[in-house]
Image (cartoon, rainbow, N blue to C red; front, side, top):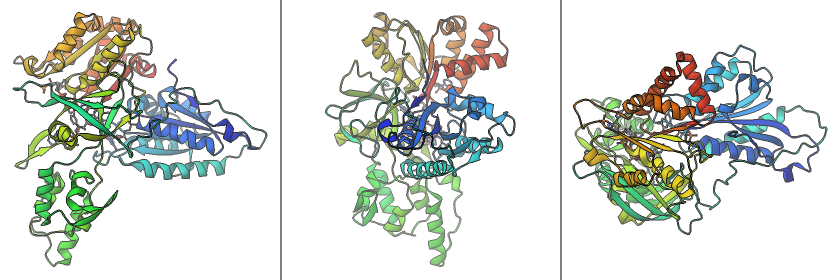
Length: 558
Ligand SMILES: Cc1cc2nc3c(=O)[nH]c(=O)nc-3n(C[C@H](O)[C@H](O)[C@H](O)COP(=O)(O)OP(=O)(O)OC[C@H]3O[C@@H](n4cnc5c(N)ncnc54)[C@H](O)[C@@H]3O)c2cc1C
Ligand SMILES: NC(=O)c1ccc[n+]([C@@H]2O[C@H](COP(=O)([O-])OP(=O)(O)OC[C@H]3O[C@@H](n4cnc5c(N)ncnc54)[C@H](OP(=O)(O)O)[C@@H]3O)[C@@H](O)[C@H]2O)c1
Ligand SMILES: Cc1cc2nc3c(=O)[nH]c(=O)nc-3n(C[C@H](O)[C@H](O)[C@H](O)COP(=O)(O)O)c2cc1C
């Protein structure tokens, strides 16, 4: 019922060929849907180039099934600290202990998605690449490690990989094999024509503060109109938002560069005044090493190597680097050449289109902190909190995530753990289930600092509860007592009941902080299963693997 496998070769293109289609399996490891989307794109391209391509979720295969394959493309992201995405975990583990020689005869190539801001850049793709090599599979084309701007390197890799696999295909020409058309998840990526690189300029309808005036946080409910865009989303999807940099930060950068902002510079959309380029097109966050090199080289050329060069860990953003080199202005054109391009941010959608047609809601926590004596602001979250309403229209696109959806069977129970902004998709799930009349029971664990200031969507959740659309609501307000109480404590207190829900077929969802909360919730879930089912640790881990493979344990964590 949950299989993701789908053959996608286009029979109209295949029909005239005299050769059989070469089989190709495209495996994706994906947490938030990008690798899956690319796998489908790869399958469409492969279909045009004489392959019978099948897209497959990594959770649906194992080393034995892989050994029976001829040609495999792997597209996977990396999560946590160099970890595989959830759906790739079991295969990642199994391949490590598979015997040498077990994949002889398999031809493969790997596309790794990642983000250079993380220390373990593209680690999971690198792991799969080396596991397959150790198991004697043949690397038909070199791996590509893609940063967040993955379109171009992906396209180049795909072209090379399909070319290499095509050349090496040695099946005799005996007839034409017609692949089944794609049956599942066949939603075109850009049915509306809008996409990450061609965003819809969505009118912003509202920015309403959810956290109380005395809260230590600034969490906002943000609403956009999608009317007229043709964009169609589902509960569980995310919205990509193109932000602009803070004008005060841009002023500080211009001052450090000794520029007035009118200087013309190149940008991805053509020549623009430096001020506009810095506001809209370049990332002023974590500096590229090339920026430091530029200063070092400029210094040497000018005969004045930098004195007391600050340690790299103190240079958190581009302005830190500029201010560490006072009086050593760079030419604007050289400067922008060593900046990253500004990237969109993803936000889990907090609305269901069945309840809020033509609109999309987000729950956005503003990132603000101080470092080295300077107040710092997250680019997109504070753009939405402070300047989005004035901007009027904002570039957005949909990011589909088929791995994070309410249970397809409306009668199944669902358990949702969503502290802080992690509440967002669960508000969408609850609205969706109410709108569709789903009969399954719904259990939400919510937590935040204080009930009086941080109980996001409190009235709405209580109304849903009163109306019988939310069957259980357990809260953990961490700072309302002397000791911390977290959502996983509430899970443990309710362990027997939680396990009964799982045994009754419940889906278990987690959303919010990846680095601490999601790990601790995973441990608590494992402990509850182990205790209630009286299992060994290994058997409890296998229970969780099975939940994952059945798509009954899904996480949207960041
Ligand atoms: C699939 C997905 C769904 C998401 N859903 C939501 C959501 O529903 N709601 C939501 O609010 N966010 C969500 N996020 C997070 C969101 O995408 C952004 O990452 C977040 O808003 C921060 O972006 P920013 O541009 O404001 O901050 P950035 O400019 O990107 O700055 C963030 C960076 O600042 C640094 N930083 C932050 N705090 C500190 C600190 N105290 N000390 C030192 N450095 C620090 C870290 O390096 C951090 O990576 C989601 C992310 C993903 C991937
Ligand atoms: N990648 C990014 O750029 C980015 C940007 C924004 C947010 N985030 C992540 O998103 C998270 C969501 O932020 P948020 O402010 O909405 O919520 P949050 O920080 O997750 O806080 C929500 C509640 O969770 C509690 N908590 C802290 N540690 C926990 C743990 N180990 N297990 C369970 N609960 C725990 C907090 O308690 P206490 O605070 O009292 O300990 C608070 O009561 C942030 O923590 C951050 O890590 C990431
Ligand atoms: C919480 C979190 C952790 C991540 N950890 C890493 C990492 O360790 N290394 C890396 O290269 N990329 C990391 N990434 C970036 C993702 O791999 C990247 O965004 C990728 O395009 C996501 O693809 P997907 O949607 O298919 O999962 C992380 C992203 C998030 C949100």
